[in-house]
Amino acid sequence: MQFDFYHVQIVGGDLIHRLEKFLPLIGHLQCAAVPSRHEPDEGEINYAAVFEAVDKLGYQGWIGAEYRPRTRTEDGPGLGTKVRRDALPLVAPSNFLKTNAFFLACG
Picture 1 (spheres, rainbow, N blue to C red):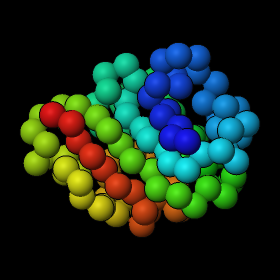
Picture 2 (picture 1 turned 90 degrees about the vertical axis):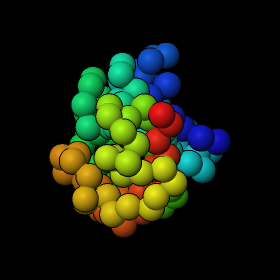
Picture 3 (picture 1 turned 135 degrees about the vertical axis):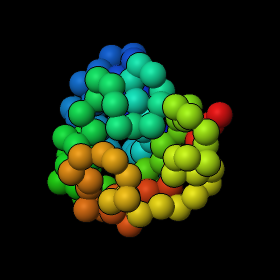
């Protein structure tokens, strides 16, 4: 099952509790800023805390970001590009995410 932080926040919030509850069923995580659906470096989700929980829970799968770029796709992480997580502007990147983030920009 895919766990999309953007949609979970829009529908009901309580992201970390829901992640803990459903982690045994989750095969993929996905993120975007709420409510803008831009790159996950703004908005109401504290991704630093979320990614810390992801690490503490031992999640080892992929984390994707499906978002609408603020400017041009080429200026962001890029379409279908595997990037180093610590190269992104988010605060306190997850240890796992430092080398295993996959970003898909929808523009």
